[in-house]
Length: 152
Image (cartoon, rainbow, N blue to C red):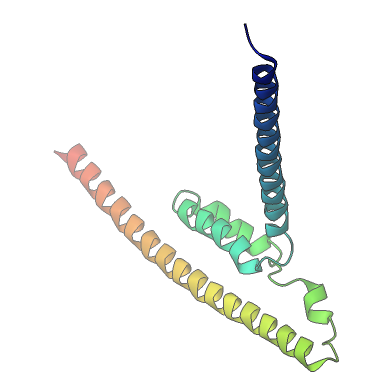
């Protein structure tokens, strides 16, 4: 037989466990919502344009060896890629000195990112050209081997 004090203690213990469980669940729910919010804000237009374009450029560079003619045709007929949003260029500088300095620093950062991207793309083009020359040499060697095999 249980005494009334034990029954009250058991109920109190269950209430404490339930309260702590609710607090833990709320804590994890808030963390999850904040993580969702951070993911949404990380893909805003404030993200540097260079980061968005570098990964597609790497994919193009790796597929050049297999689709040389297709890429050449596309690059001649394709419109230039817009690296900077027009609204960013046309915005007037703020009249407040500190805001203007921040804006200039932001534009300088974008400028440096674009310069870095330009050097990366030039290096990729040089690498692709070198790969093309090597592939052409390899094809010539294989053709020569094939001719020797047929003549033997």
